[in-house]
Image 1 (tube, rainbow, N blue to C red):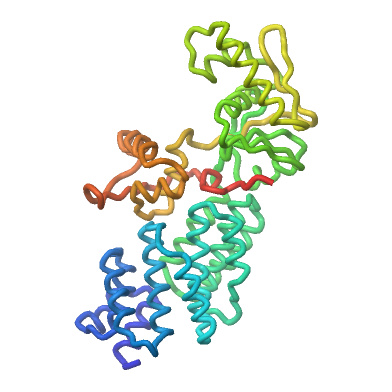
Image 2 (cartoon, rainbow, N blue to C red):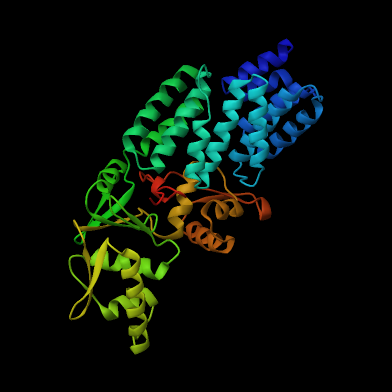
Length: 405
């Protein structure tokens, strides 16, 4: 490595992309192309960055496998920053294994962190946990140690383990300070803010209030029956029932839980569940069928009892609460993803949420009308961004935030 390339690499390690380009901007040899690509990525020009990294990978010879693997890892990270979630994960894993074999432990760790961050983004929580378990961090540079602890903290947030998340973020902050990278320090601070901001709305006996993540964690440890509208799950400490693929049953469960300990009139249930303005006998028959299905789904968690005017939810133990997102509907899940500050395409949002592009486009139009987000680019290059949510933590809305036990 010549002196100019070494100087550019040191500048990039400190987050000084402009300083790095001063050394290699006019060079077209593979090491310089790779550093230029990383610099362009730090400056936000992801398309140009990926082209430069591909040129660098092609420029390295067959004997320079370690350099080629590093270029592949760098391109994968740029794709993640650009929210291109369709890149080849198997190629990244192959690069990580190659770097391990060739003795480049730091970049092998980097590759696995990129993979884990992608898995977290699309809700593959168990896979992210397995990936982190294989990431050896012994002797890792401070910047990589900070990224590792940040990823562990985000994983703890998805599992609703507030204390574990706080400890991981503290370790990440200390490592980021040692690395002296302002952008990384700011990212960790943003993640730490989720612990003190309201994460959801809690409804108990008709009273609604905001709750933090640690309060949600404490709630899950009680004997209360929780109808979780963030992940469409009905849960108790020992058992959980997912209603994510059964929207009618979930709507009925929320309506009954919000009214607890009272009941809900039949016509009100019909209007809310079936959107029927004038309930008739056909609606009432369908309501009985759906309530029977809900009874069967809930099993030993709760009973559904008929009353003189409607139906009531009766938990086997404890009281009934509803945990709802701070922002209702598909828009809340979209803003939860946009809150990280990166730009997203419509297709990437649909991929991450497991939804259709048409559904995402409708939600985006509504958010754009309320000035809740902004766009850059036109046509197929259009990207969506959003500012912070004014003090709301939205990790409960992210894909896979609360896996069902």
